[in-house]
Image 1 (cartoon, one colour):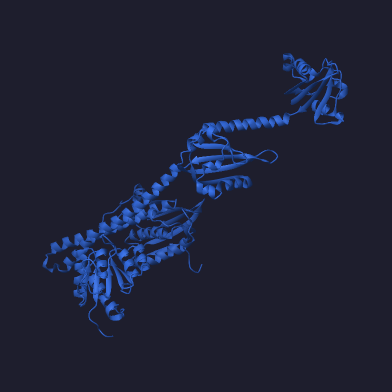
Image 2: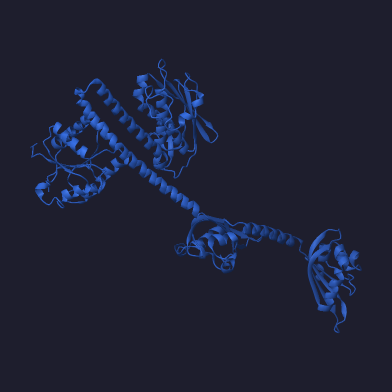
Length: 149
Length: 489
Protein backbone atom coordinates (compact mmCIF):
# COMPACT_ATOMS: atom_id res chain seq x y z
CA UNK A 1 0.00 0.00 0.00
CA UNK A 2 1.44 3.35 -1.04
CA UNK A 3 1.69 5.83 1.78
CA UNK A 4 0.25 9.07 0.49
CA UNK A 5 0.76 12.52 1.98
CA UNK A 6 -0.68 12.55 5.48
CA UNK A 7 -4.40 12.77 5.46
CA UNK A 8 -6.14 15.89 6.75
CA UNK A 9 -8.21 15.10 9.82
CA UNK A 10 -11.01 17.58 10.51
CA UNK A 11 -12.34 17.54 14.07
CA UNK A 12 -15.56 19.36 14.91
CA UNK A 13 -15.93 19.93 18.66
CA UNK A 14 -17.14 22.94 20.62
CA UNK A 15 -15.04 22.04 23.67
CA UNK A 16 -11.61 23.69 23.62
CA UNK A 17 -10.19 21.27 26.19
CA UNK A 18 -11.28 18.28 24.13
CA UNK A 19 -9.73 19.77 21.01
CA UNK A 20 -6.48 20.38 22.86
CA UNK A 21 -6.38 16.91 24.40
CA UNK A 22 -7.08 15.26 21.08
CA UNK A 23 -4.28 17.21 19.48
CA UNK A 24 -1.94 16.03 22.21
CA UNK A 25 -3.20 12.47 21.81
CA UNK A 26 -2.38 12.60 18.09
CA UNK A 27 1.09 13.78 18.98
CA UNK A 28 1.53 11.06 21.58
CA UNK A 29 0.45 8.45 19.03
CA UNK A 30 2.99 9.85 16.61
CA UNK A 31 0.39 10.40 13.95
CA UNK A 32 1.67 12.88 11.44
CA UNK A 33 -1.74 13.99 10.29
CA UNK A 34 -2.65 17.56 9.52
CA UNK A 35 -5.25 18.08 12.27
CA UNK A 36 -7.78 20.87 11.65
CA UNK A 37 -10.60 22.05 13.88
CA UNK A 38 -14.13 23.44 13.54
CA UNK A 39 -15.78 24.82 16.65
CA UNK A 40 -19.41 23.96 15.87
CA UNK A 41 -21.74 22.67 13.13
CA UNK A 42 -21.95 25.99 11.30
CA UNK A 43 -18.17 26.37 11.30
CA UNK A 44 -17.83 22.77 10.09
CA UNK A 45 -20.18 23.24 7.12
CA UNK A 46 -18.55 26.56 6.22
CA UNK A 47 -15.19 24.78 6.12
CA UNK A 48 -16.47 21.90 4.01
CA UNK A 49 -18.38 24.07 1.58
CA UNK A 50 -15.62 26.68 1.46
CA UNK A 51 -17.69 29.66 2.40
CA UNK A 52 -17.76 32.28 5.14
CA UNK A 53 -14.22 32.69 6.39
CA UNK A 54 -13.07 29.64 4.43
CA UNK A 55 -13.09 31.00 0.89
CA UNK A 56 -9.35 30.39 0.46
CA UNK A 57 -8.94 26.68 -0.37
CA UNK A 58 -5.51 26.53 1.16
CA UNK A 59 -7.09 27.45 4.48
CA UNK A 60 -9.49 24.53 4.29
CA UNK A 61 -7.91 21.49 2.66
CA UNK A 62 -10.40 18.72 2.05
CA UNK A 63 -10.34 16.26 4.97
CA UNK A 64 -9.84 12.56 4.42
CA UNK A 65 -11.83 11.88 7.60
CA UNK A 66 -14.07 13.89 9.93
CA UNK A 67 -14.22 13.44 13.72
CA UNK A 68 -17.62 14.75 14.71
CA UNK A 69 -18.96 15.66 18.13
CA UNK A 70 -22.74 15.40 18.47
CA UNK A 71 -23.60 18.14 20.93
CA UNK A 72 -22.50 21.52 19.62
CA UNK A 73 -24.13 24.94 19.67
CA UNK A 74 -25.65 26.64 16.56
CA UNK A 75 -25.79 23.37 14.65
CA UNK A 76 -25.22 20.01 16.26
CA UNK A 77 -23.41 16.98 14.86
CA UNK A 78 -26.61 15.20 13.86
CA UNK A 79 -27.72 18.02 11.58
CA UNK A 80 -24.21 18.45 10.15
CA UNK A 81 -23.97 14.72 9.43
CA UNK A 82 -27.27 14.77 7.58
CA UNK A 83 -26.10 17.72 5.51
CA UNK A 84 -22.77 16.09 4.69
CA UNK A 85 -24.50 12.92 3.51
CA UNK A 86 -26.89 14.94 1.37
CA UNK A 87 -24.08 16.73 -0.44
CA UNK A 88 -22.74 14.72 -3.42
CA UNK A 89 -19.37 16.37 -3.09
CA UNK A 90 -18.99 15.54 0.59
CA UNK A 91 -20.87 12.31 1.12
CA UNK A 92 -17.87 10.07 0.46
CA UNK A 93 -15.89 11.43 3.40
CA UNK A 94 -15.80 8.96 6.32
CA UNK A 95 -17.35 10.46 9.44
CA UNK A 96 -16.46 9.07 12.85
CA UNK A 97 -18.68 10.29 15.68
CA UNK A 98 -16.55 11.19 18.70
CA UNK A 99 -18.82 12.31 21.50
CA UNK A 100 -19.37 12.21 25.23
CA UNK A 101 -22.82 10.66 24.80
CA UNK A 102 -23.27 6.92 25.26
CA UNK A 103 -27.01 7.07 24.77
CA UNK A 104 -28.50 4.16 22.84
CA UNK A 105 -30.63 6.60 20.90
CA UNK A 106 -27.64 8.67 19.77
CA UNK A 107 -25.76 5.58 18.63
CA UNK A 108 -28.71 4.25 16.63
CA UNK A 109 -29.50 7.61 15.12
CA UNK A 110 -25.89 8.23 14.07
CA UNK A 111 -25.71 4.98 12.19
CA UNK A 112 -29.10 5.65 10.63
CA UNK A 113 -27.71 8.95 9.36
CA UNK A 114 -24.83 6.93 7.85
CA UNK A 115 -21.99 7.76 10.20
CA UNK A 116 -19.14 5.33 9.61
CA UNK A 117 -18.59 4.57 13.26
CA UNK A 118 -19.34 5.84 16.74
CA UNK A 119 -16.87 6.36 19.58
CA UNK A 120 -17.69 7.53 23.10
CA UNK A 121 -14.92 9.84 24.30
CA UNK A 122 -12.92 8.11 26.99
CA UNK A 123 -12.31 9.88 30.28
CA UNK A 124 -8.65 9.34 30.89
CA UNK A 125 -5.97 10.76 28.65
CA UNK A 126 -4.27 7.41 28.36
CA UNK A 127 -7.46 5.87 27.01
CA UNK A 128 -7.84 8.78 24.59
CA UNK A 129 -4.34 8.18 23.27
CA UNK A 130 -5.24 4.52 22.73
CA UNK A 131 -8.38 5.47 20.85
CA UNK A 132 -6.54 7.93 18.65
CA UNK A 133 -3.78 5.42 17.96
CA UNK A 134 -6.42 2.87 17.10
CA UNK A 135 -8.15 5.31 14.80
CA UNK A 136 -4.87 6.00 13.07
CA UNK A 137 -4.04 2.35 12.63
CA UNK A 138 -7.48 1.49 11.32
CA UNK A 139 -8.30 4.41 9.04
CA UNK A 140 -4.85 5.29 7.80
CA UNK A 141 -3.06 1.93 7.62
CA UNK A 142 -5.62 -0.83 7.35
CA UNK A 143 -8.45 0.82 5.47
CA UNK A 144 -8.47 2.13 1.89
CA UNK A 145 -9.93 5.61 1.79
CA UNK A 146 -11.90 6.98 -1.15
CA UNK A 147 -10.17 9.19 -3.63
CA UNK A 148 -11.04 12.86 -3.04
CA UNK A 149 -13.39 14.34 -5.67
CA UNK B 1 -122.79 -11.23 16.09
CA UNK B 2 -122.42 -8.80 18.99
CA UNK B 3 -123.21 -11.65 21.31
CA UNK B 4 -120.05 -13.47 20.29
CA UNK B 5 -117.60 -10.57 20.62
CA UNK B 6 -115.05 -11.41 23.31
CA UNK B 7 -112.97 -8.28 23.78
CA UNK B 8 -115.78 -5.79 24.23
CA UNK B 9 -118.59 -5.83 26.73
CA UNK B 10 -121.56 -4.66 24.66
CA UNK B 11 -124.97 -4.46 26.33
CA UNK B 12 -128.12 -2.46 26.49
CA UNK B 13 -129.50 -0.45 29.37
CA UNK B 14 -133.05 0.67 29.88
CA UNK B 15 -133.66 4.42 30.23
CA UNK B 16 -133.45 3.88 34.00
CA UNK B 17 -130.12 2.10 33.70
CA UNK B 18 -131.27 -1.48 34.06
CA UNK B 19 -129.20 -4.04 32.17
CA UNK B 20 -131.38 -5.52 29.45
CA UNK B 21 -128.93 -7.47 27.30
CA UNK B 22 -125.57 -9.14 27.67
CA UNK B 23 -122.80 -10.54 25.50
CA UNK B 24 -119.85 -12.91 25.76
CA UNK B 25 -117.40 -10.05 26.12
CA UNK B 26 -119.40 -8.64 29.02
CA UNK B 27 -119.37 -12.02 30.69
CA UNK B 28 -115.62 -12.36 30.19
CA UNK B 29 -114.80 -8.84 31.30
CA UNK B 30 -117.24 -8.38 34.20
CA UNK B 31 -117.68 -11.98 35.28
CA UNK B 32 -121.51 -12.14 35.38
CA UNK B 33 -123.60 -14.67 33.48
CA UNK B 34 -126.49 -13.18 31.58
CA UNK B 35 -129.14 -14.69 33.92
CA UNK B 36 -127.54 -13.11 37.00
CA UNK B 37 -127.19 -9.60 35.65
CA UNK B 38 -130.14 -8.88 33.39
CA UNK B 39 -132.60 -6.85 35.39
CA UNK B 40 -130.02 -5.38 37.71
CA UNK B 41 -128.97 -1.70 37.74
CA UNK B 42 -125.72 -1.01 35.94
CA UNK B 43 -124.28 0.89 38.93
CA UNK B 44 -123.43 -2.54 40.28
CA UNK B 45 -120.33 -2.27 38.10
CA UNK B 46 -119.08 0.84 39.89
CA UNK B 47 -116.90 1.14 43.01
CA UNK B 48 -118.73 2.42 46.07
CA UNK B 49 -116.97 5.83 45.99
CA UNK B 50 -118.18 6.35 42.41
CA UNK B 51 -121.74 5.45 43.37
CA UNK B 52 -121.57 7.84 46.36
CA UNK B 53 -120.44 10.60 44.06
CA UNK B 54 -123.30 9.88 41.69
CA UNK B 55 -121.19 8.91 38.73
CA UNK B 56 -123.50 6.34 37.14
CA UNK B 57 -126.44 8.83 36.89
CA UNK B 58 -124.13 11.54 35.67
CA UNK B 59 -122.87 9.33 32.87
CA UNK B 60 -126.38 8.42 31.78
CA UNK B 61 -127.54 12.01 31.87
CA UNK B 62 -124.55 13.11 29.82
CA UNK B 63 -125.22 10.40 27.29
CA UNK B 64 -128.86 11.41 27.13
CA UNK B 65 -128.21 15.09 26.60
CA UNK B 66 -125.10 14.97 24.45
CA UNK B 67 -125.63 11.70 22.69
CA UNK B 68 -122.64 9.88 24.11
CA UNK B 69 -120.45 9.65 27.14
CA UNK B 70 -116.89 8.30 27.11
CA UNK B 71 -114.61 7.77 30.05
CA UNK B 72 -111.94 5.66 31.60
CA UNK B 73 -112.17 4.55 35.16
CA UNK B 74 -112.25 1.69 37.62
CA UNK B 75 -115.04 -0.83 37.41
CA UNK B 76 -115.87 -3.82 39.60
CA UNK B 77 -116.17 -7.40 38.50
CA UNK B 78 -118.53 -9.99 39.92
CA UNK B 79 -115.75 -11.29 42.21
CA UNK B 80 -115.13 -7.81 43.61
CA UNK B 81 -111.85 -7.26 41.79
CA UNK B 82 -111.26 -3.96 40.04
CA UNK B 83 -110.34 -3.40 36.47
CA UNK B 84 -109.54 -0.30 34.44
CA UNK B 85 -112.24 0.27 31.90
CA UNK B 86 -112.73 2.32 28.80
CA UNK B 87 -116.46 3.04 28.65
CA UNK B 88 -118.64 4.47 25.91
CA UNK B 89 -122.33 5.02 26.61
CA UNK B 90 -124.46 5.99 23.66
CA UNK B 91 -128.02 7.14 23.99
CA UNK B 92 -130.48 5.13 21.91
CA UNK B 93 -133.33 7.28 20.76
CA UNK B 94 -136.35 6.78 18.60
CA UNK B 95 -137.27 8.91 15.63
CA UNK B 96 -138.88 11.59 17.81
CA UNK B 97 -135.88 11.87 20.08
CA UNK B 98 -137.45 9.82 22.79
CA UNK B 99 -135.04 7.90 24.92
CA UNK B 100 -135.26 4.17 24.38
CA UNK B 101 -132.25 3.28 26.43
CA UNK B 102 -128.47 3.17 26.22
CA UNK B 103 -125.82 1.17 24.50
CA UNK B 104 -122.82 0.58 26.72
CA UNK B 105 -119.52 -0.63 25.37
CA UNK B 106 -116.79 -1.42 27.87
CA UNK B 107 -113.19 -2.44 27.28
CA UNK B 108 -110.82 -3.86 29.87
CA UNK B 109 -107.69 -1.70 29.65
CA UNK B 110 -106.10 -2.81 32.90
CA UNK B 111 -103.01 -4.26 31.27
CA UNK B 112 -102.55 -1.34 28.94
CA UNK B 113 -102.95 1.06 31.83
CA UNK B 114 -100.36 -0.74 33.88
CA UNK B 115 -97.92 -0.51 31.03
CA UNK B 116 -98.64 3.15 30.57
CA UNK B 117 -98.25 3.86 34.24
CA UNK B 118 -95.01 1.95 34.39
CA UNK B 119 -93.80 3.81 31.35
CA UNK B 120 -94.86 7.15 32.73
CA UNK B 121 -93.24 6.25 36.01
CA UNK B 122 -89.98 5.33 34.40
CA UNK B 123 -90.17 8.34 32.12
CA UNK B 124 -90.76 10.44 35.19
CA UNK B 125 -87.79 8.93 36.90
CA UNK B 126 -85.68 9.38 33.80
CA UNK B 127 -86.80 12.96 33.48
CA UNK B 128 -86.06 13.56 37.13
CA UNK B 129 -82.63 12.07 36.71
CA UNK B 130 -82.04 13.96 33.51
CA UNK B 131 -83.20 17.24 34.99
CA UNK B 132 -81.01 16.91 38.04
CA UNK B 133 -77.91 15.94 36.09
CA UNK B 134 -76.05 19.07 35.13
CA UNK B 135 -72.86 17.32 34.16
CA UNK B 136 -74.49 14.86 31.80
CA UNK B 137 -76.40 15.75 28.68
CA UNK B 138 -79.44 13.49 28.53
CA UNK B 139 -81.29 13.89 25.30
CA UNK B 140 -83.98 11.94 23.56
CA UNK B 141 -83.97 11.50 19.83
CA UNK B 142 -86.78 10.24 17.66
CA UNK B 143 -86.05 7.35 15.28
CA UNK B 144 -84.87 9.84 12.66
CA UNK B 145 -82.38 11.46 15.01
CA UNK B 146 -84.39 14.61 15.72
CA UNK B 147 -84.16 15.94 19.25
CA UNK B 148 -87.30 15.53 21.32
CA UNK B 149 -86.06 16.22 24.82
CA UNK B 150 -83.32 18.30 26.46
CA UNK B 151 -81.94 18.69 29.99
CA UNK B 152 -79.92 21.23 32.02
CA UNK B 153 -76.76 19.19 31.48
CA UNK B 154 -77.21 19.34 27.72
CA UNK B 155 -77.66 23.09 27.91
CA UNK B 156 -74.55 23.42 30.02
CA UNK B 157 -72.42 21.17 27.86
CA UNK B 158 -73.63 22.09 24.40
CA UNK B 159 -74.85 25.66 24.96
CA UNK B 160 -78.33 25.45 23.39
CA UNK B 161 -81.55 26.31 25.23
CA UNK B 162 -84.21 23.66 24.86
CA UNK B 163 -86.53 25.92 22.82
CA UNK B 164 -83.95 26.45 20.13
CA UNK B 165 -82.76 22.85 19.82
CA UNK B 166 -85.84 20.66 20.10
CA UNK B 167 -86.85 19.51 16.67
CA UNK B 168 -83.38 19.94 15.22
CA UNK B 169 -81.31 17.01 14.01
CA UNK B 170 -78.62 15.81 16.38
CA UNK B 171 -75.95 16.00 13.70
CA UNK B 172 -75.83 19.70 14.51
CA UNK B 173 -73.45 18.71 17.34
CA UNK B 174 -70.89 17.17 15.06
CA UNK B 175 -67.90 18.84 13.40
CA UNK B 176 -68.20 19.23 9.66
CA UNK B 177 -65.64 16.49 8.91
CA UNK B 178 -67.69 14.02 10.90
CA UNK B 179 -70.90 14.93 9.14
CA UNK B 180 -69.19 14.63 5.75
CA UNK B 181 -68.00 11.16 6.69
CA UNK B 182 -71.52 10.19 7.70
CA UNK B 183 -70.73 9.61 11.36
CA UNK B 184 -74.07 10.66 12.91
CA UNK B 185 -76.08 8.31 10.69
CA UNK B 186 -73.56 5.53 11.31
CA UNK B 187 -73.83 5.93 15.07
CA UNK B 188 -77.62 5.66 14.99
CA UNK B 189 -77.38 2.59 12.82
CA UNK B 190 -75.01 0.87 15.23
CA UNK B 191 -77.31 1.79 18.11
CA UNK B 192 -80.25 0.37 16.21
CA UNK B 193 -78.61 -2.91 15.27
CA UNK B 194 -76.48 -3.57 18.33
CA UNK B 195 -78.62 -1.79 20.90
CA UNK B 196 -76.04 0.79 21.83
CA UNK B 197 -73.20 2.87 20.54
CA UNK B 198 -70.29 4.26 22.58
CA UNK B 199 -67.52 6.52 21.50
CA UNK B 200 -65.28 9.45 22.37
CA UNK B 201 -64.78 12.27 19.96
CA UNK B 202 -64.96 15.97 19.21
CA UNK B 203 -68.33 17.68 19.33
CA UNK B 204 -69.33 21.26 18.59
CA UNK B 205 -71.08 23.66 20.94
CA UNK B 206 -73.60 26.34 20.00
CA UNK B 207 -70.84 28.97 19.93
CA UNK B 208 -68.78 26.84 17.54
CA UNK B 209 -66.18 25.82 20.10
CA UNK B 210 -65.19 22.18 20.31
CA UNK B 211 -65.21 19.85 23.26
CA UNK B 212 -64.06 16.25 23.75
CA UNK B 213 -67.14 14.13 24.40
CA UNK B 214 -67.85 10.70 25.80
CA UNK B 215 -71.05 9.60 24.06
CA UNK B 216 -73.48 6.73 24.70
CA UNK B 217 -76.44 6.22 22.39
CA UNK B 218 -79.03 3.60 23.34
CA UNK B 219 -81.95 2.60 21.16
CA UNK B 220 -85.28 1.89 22.81
CA UNK B 221 -88.24 0.06 21.40
CA UNK B 222 -91.86 -0.46 22.24
CA UNK B 223 -93.32 -3.85 23.17
CA UNK B 224 -93.74 -4.80 19.55
CA UNK B 225 -90.02 -4.28 18.95
CA UNK B 226 -90.55 -1.17 16.91
CA UNK B 227 -87.95 1.55 17.27
CA UNK B 228 -89.26 4.41 19.36
CA UNK B 229 -86.14 6.51 19.51
CA UNK B 230 -82.75 6.91 21.12
CA UNK B 231 -81.37 8.08 24.41
CA UNK B 232 -78.15 10.00 24.07
CA UNK B 233 -75.93 10.62 27.07
CA UNK B 234 -72.98 12.90 26.56
CA UNK B 235 -70.23 13.85 28.96
CA UNK B 236 -67.77 16.65 28.48
CA UNK B 237 -64.31 15.13 28.91
CA UNK B 238 -62.37 18.12 27.67
CA UNK B 239 -60.92 18.71 31.11
CA UNK B 240 -59.67 15.16 31.31
CA UNK B 241 -58.27 15.30 27.80
CA UNK B 242 -56.56 18.59 28.52
CA UNK B 243 -55.12 17.11 31.67
CA UNK B 244 -53.82 14.18 29.64
CA UNK B 245 -52.26 16.59 27.16
CA UNK B 246 -50.70 18.59 29.94
CA UNK B 247 -49.33 15.45 31.52
CA UNK B 248 -47.90 14.28 28.22
CA UNK B 249 -46.26 17.62 27.63
CA UNK B 250 -44.93 17.82 31.15
CA UNK B 251 -43.47 14.35 30.82
CA UNK B 252 -41.82 15.35 27.59
CA UNK B 253 -40.35 18.43 29.23
CA UNK B 254 -39.14 16.37 32.16
CA UNK B 255 -37.52 13.95 29.77
CA UNK B 256 -35.77 16.75 27.94
CA UNK B 257 -34.75 18.29 31.23
CA UNK B 258 -33.40 14.99 32.48
CA UNK B 259 -31.25 14.33 29.44
CA UNK B 260 -30.01 17.89 29.19
CA UNK B 261 -29.28 17.95 32.90
CA UNK B 262 -27.46 14.68 32.62
CA UNK B 263 -25.34 15.88 29.75
CA UNK B 264 -24.56 19.32 31.12
CA UNK B 265 -24.05 18.10 34.67
CA UNK B 266 -21.70 15.41 33.51
CA UNK B 267 -19.56 17.74 31.49
CA UNK B 268 -17.64 19.50 34.28
CA UNK B 269 -17.23 16.16 36.00
CA UNK B 270 -15.69 14.76 32.91
CA UNK B 271 -13.18 17.57 32.91
CA UNK B 272 -12.35 16.98 36.54
CA UNK B 273 -11.73 13.34 35.75
CA UNK B 274 -9.79 14.02 32.56
CA UNK B 275 -7.46 16.65 33.93
CA UNK B 276 -7.24 14.97 37.30
CA UNK B 277 -6.09 11.90 35.51
CA UNK B 278 -3.44 13.86 33.61
CA UNK B 279 -2.35 15.44 36.82
CA UNK B 280 -2.05 12.04 38.39
CA UNK B 281 0.36 10.83 35.71
CA UNK B 282 2.57 13.87 36.32
CA UNK B 283 2.17 13.65 40.09
CA UNK B 284 5.69 12.41 40.78
CA UNK B 285 6.58 15.92 41.93
CA UNK B 286 3.72 15.94 44.44
CA UNK B 287 4.14 14.68 47.98
CA UNK B 288 2.15 11.70 49.25
CA UNK B 289 -0.45 13.89 50.99
CA UNK B 290 -1.09 15.88 47.82
CA UNK B 291 -1.43 12.70 45.80
CA UNK B 292 -3.94 11.47 48.37
CA UNK B 293 -6.03 14.63 48.03
CA UNK B 294 -5.98 14.21 44.28
CA UNK B 295 -7.24 10.64 44.59
CA UNK B 296 -10.12 11.75 46.78
CA UNK B 297 -11.08 14.45 44.30
CA UNK B 298 -11.13 11.92 41.50
CA UNK B 299 -13.08 9.40 43.57
CA UNK B 300 -15.73 12.04 44.27
CA UNK B 301 -16.03 12.83 40.60
CA UNK B 302 -16.62 9.16 39.82
CA UNK B 303 -19.27 8.97 42.51
CA UNK B 304 -21.04 11.99 41.18
CA UNK B 305 -21.15 10.56 37.67
CA UNK B 306 -22.61 7.32 38.99
CA UNK B 307 -25.20 9.29 40.91
CA UNK B 308 -26.25 11.28 37.88
CA UNK B 309 -26.57 8.09 35.86
CA UNK B 310 -28.65 6.47 38.58
CA UNK B 311 -30.92 9.53 38.76
CA UNK B 312 -31.34 9.46 35.01
CA UNK B 313 -32.22 5.76 35.08
CA UNK B 314 -34.73 6.43 37.84
CA UNK B 315 -36.43 9.24 35.96
CA UNK B 316 -36.56 7.13 32.82
CA UNK B 317 -38.63 4.37 34.43
CA UNK B 318 -41.86 6.13 33.64
CA UNK B 319 -40.85 8.87 31.24
CA UNK B 320 -39.12 6.91 28.53
CA UNK B 321 -40.91 3.63 29.12
CA UNK B 322 -41.86 1.41 26.20
CA UNK B 323 -45.10 -0.60 26.37
CA UNK B 324 -45.27 -4.08 27.88
CA UNK B 325 -44.61 -7.36 26.13
CA UNK B 326 -44.68 -10.99 27.17
CA UNK B 327 -41.63 -11.78 29.34
CA UNK B 328 -40.35 -15.21 30.37
CA UNK B 329 -38.85 -14.26 33.70
CA UNK B 330 -36.98 -17.52 34.16
CA UNK B 331 -35.03 -16.96 30.98
CA UNK B 332 -34.43 -13.29 31.77
CA UNK B 333 -33.18 -13.93 35.30
CA UNK B 334 -30.84 -16.66 34.07
CA UNK B 335 -29.33 -14.10 31.71
CA UNK B 336 -28.95 -11.57 34.53
CA UNK B 337 -27.22 -14.25 36.56
CA UNK B 338 -24.84 -14.88 33.70
CA UNK B 339 -24.05 -11.17 33.53
CA UNK B 340 -23.19 -11.24 37.22
CA UNK B 341 -21.05 -14.36 36.77
CA UNK B 342 -17.79 -12.63 37.66
CA UNK B 343 -19.14 -11.31 40.91
CA UNK B 344 -20.72 -14.67 41.72
CA UNK B 345 -17.42 -16.44 41.15
CA UNK B 346 -15.54 -13.94 43.28
CA UNK B 347 -17.84 -14.50 46.23
CA UNK B 348 -18.12 -18.26 45.55
CA UNK B 349 -21.82 -17.65 45.51
CA UNK B 350 -24.75 -19.51 44.05
CA UNK B 351 -28.07 -18.41 42.53
CA UNK B 352 -30.87 -20.95 42.61
CA UNK B 353 -34.00 -20.35 40.51
CA UNK B 354 -36.84 -22.54 41.75
CA UNK B 355 -39.63 -21.20 39.57
CA UNK B 356 -40.49 -18.00 37.74
CA UNK B 357 -43.58 -17.12 35.69
CA UNK B 358 -44.18 -15.58 32.31
CA UNK B 359 -46.04 -12.28 32.48
CA UNK B 360 -46.67 -8.90 30.81
CA UNK B 361 -43.79 -6.54 31.57
CA UNK B 362 -41.08 -4.27 30.24
CA UNK B 363 -38.10 -6.58 29.66
CA UNK B 364 -35.44 -3.93 30.16
CA UNK B 365 -36.97 -2.84 33.45
CA UNK B 366 -37.35 -6.43 34.65
CA UNK B 367 -33.70 -6.84 33.91
CA UNK B 368 -32.86 -3.73 35.96
CA UNK B 369 -35.07 -5.00 38.78
CA UNK B 370 -33.43 -8.40 39.09
CA UNK B 371 -29.95 -7.06 38.47
CA UNK B 372 -30.42 -4.82 41.49
CA UNK B 373 -31.97 -7.45 43.72
CA UNK B 374 -29.47 -10.17 42.91
CA UNK B 375 -26.59 -7.69 42.87
CA UNK B 376 -27.60 -6.49 46.34
CA UNK B 377 -27.85 -10.02 47.62
CA UNK B 378 -24.31 -10.69 46.43
CA UNK B 379 -23.02 -7.39 47.78
CA UNK B 380 -24.49 -7.70 51.25
CA UNK B 381 -23.27 -11.22 51.88
CA UNK B 382 -21.69 -12.34 55.14
CA UNK B 383 -17.90 -12.45 54.84
CA UNK B 384 -17.61 -15.95 56.27
CA UNK B 385 -20.51 -17.40 54.33
CA UNK B 386 -20.69 -17.69 50.52
CA UNK B 387 -23.93 -16.03 49.32
CA UNK B 388 -26.78 -18.37 48.40
CA UNK B 389 -29.65 -16.65 46.62
CA UNK B 390 -32.95 -18.43 46.17
CA UNK B 391 -35.56 -17.15 43.74
CA UNK B 392 -39.05 -18.57 43.84
CA UNK B 393 -42.56 -17.60 42.85
CA UNK B 394 -46.17 -18.49 43.56
CA UNK B 395 -49.55 -17.37 42.29
CA UNK B 396 -51.59 -15.18 44.62
CA UNK B 397 -54.94 -14.32 43.08
CA UNK B 398 -54.37 -12.20 39.99
CA UNK B 399 -50.78 -11.55 41.03
CA UNK B 400 -47.50 -13.42 40.90
CA UNK B 401 -45.52 -13.25 44.13
CA UNK B 402 -41.79 -13.52 43.47
CA UNK B 403 -39.31 -13.87 46.33
CA UNK B 404 -35.56 -13.24 46.25
CA UNK B 405 -34.04 -14.64 49.40
CA UNK B 406 -30.41 -14.40 50.52
CA UNK B 407 -28.34 -15.57 53.48
CA UNK B 408 -26.39 -12.35 53.89
CA UNK B 409 -26.03 -9.74 56.60
CA UNK B 410 -29.70 -8.78 56.67
CA UNK B 411 -31.03 -5.60 58.26
CA UNK B 412 -33.29 -4.52 61.08
CA UNK B 413 -37.06 -4.64 60.62
CA UNK B 414 -37.37 -0.96 61.48
CA UNK B 415 -35.63 -0.09 58.21
CA UNK B 416 -37.77 -2.21 55.93
CA UNK B 417 -39.62 0.80 54.48
CA UNK B 418 -36.72 3.23 54.53
CA UNK B 419 -34.46 1.18 52.33
CA UNK B 420 -36.78 1.79 49.38
CA UNK B 421 -36.42 5.55 49.59
CA UNK B 422 -34.18 7.51 47.30
CA UNK B 423 -30.62 7.96 48.51
CA UNK B 424 -31.25 5.99 51.69
CA UNK B 425 -28.43 3.75 52.74
CA UNK B 426 -27.89 1.70 55.85
CA UNK B 427 -24.12 1.69 55.66
CA UNK B 428 -21.35 4.21 55.21
CA UNK B 429 -19.61 4.70 51.93
CA UNK B 430 -16.51 3.01 53.22
CA UNK B 431 -18.32 -0.19 54.15
CA UNK B 432 -20.28 -0.88 51.00
CA UNK B 433 -20.31 1.05 47.74
CA UNK B 434 -23.56 2.31 46.32
CA UNK B 435 -25.65 5.42 45.76
CA UNK B 436 -28.77 4.42 47.66
CA UNK B 437 -30.81 4.44 44.47
CA UNK B 438 -30.94 0.73 43.69
CA UNK B 439 -34.00 -0.21 45.75
CA UNK B 440 -35.74 3.09 44.96
CA UNK B 441 -35.36 2.17 41.30
CA UNK B 442 -36.73 -1.32 42.01
CA UNK B 443 -39.77 0.13 43.69
CA UNK B 444 -40.41 2.60 40.90
CA UNK B 445 -40.18 -0.16 38.29
CA UNK B 446 -42.49 -2.44 40.25
CA UNK B 447 -45.01 0.36 40.79
CA UNK B 448 -44.98 1.25 37.12
CA UNK B 449 -46.06 -2.34 36.56
CA UNK B 450 -48.87 -1.78 39.10
CA UNK B 451 -47.26 -4.14 41.56
CA UNK B 452 -45.52 -3.79 44.90
CA UNK B 453 -42.26 -4.65 46.63
CA UNK B 454 -41.48 -5.30 50.28
CA UNK B 455 -38.66 -6.69 52.36
CA UNK B 456 -38.33 -8.91 55.40
CA UNK B 457 -35.17 -9.48 57.35
CA UNK B 458 -33.34 -10.07 60.61
CA UNK B 459 -29.78 -8.89 61.18
CA UNK B 460 -27.38 -11.71 60.45
CA UNK B 461 -30.11 -13.90 59.00
CA UNK B 462 -30.33 -12.70 55.43
CA UNK B 463 -33.16 -10.88 53.72
CA UNK B 464 -36.13 -11.75 51.57
CA UNK B 465 -37.47 -9.32 48.98
CA UNK B 466 -41.01 -9.95 47.82
CA UNK B 467 -42.09 -8.57 44.47
CA UNK B 468 -45.76 -8.74 43.53
CA UNK B 469 -46.60 -8.25 39.85
CA UNK B 470 -49.95 -8.55 38.05
CA UNK B 471 -50.16 -11.64 35.87
CA UNK B 472 -51.99 -9.61 33.22
CA UNK B 473 -50.83 -6.11 32.51
CA UNK B 474 -51.76 -4.24 29.42
CA UNK B 475 -49.97 -1.08 30.37
CA UNK B 476 -50.54 1.38 27.57
CA UNK B 477 -50.34 -0.43 24.27
CA UNK B 478 -49.42 -4.04 24.16
CA UNK B 479 -46.39 -4.48 22.00
CA UNK B 480 -45.68 -7.78 20.28
CA UNK B 481 -42.19 -6.67 19.40
CA UNK B 482 -41.29 -5.97 22.96
CA UNK B 483 -41.89 -9.54 24.04
CA UNK B 484 -38.92 -11.31 25.53
CA UNK B 485 -38.58 -15.02 25.29
CA UNK B 486 -36.13 -17.71 24.40
CA UNK B 487 -35.41 -17.71 20.70
CA UNK B 488 -35.99 -21.44 20.46
CA UNK B 489 -39.18 -21.28 22.49
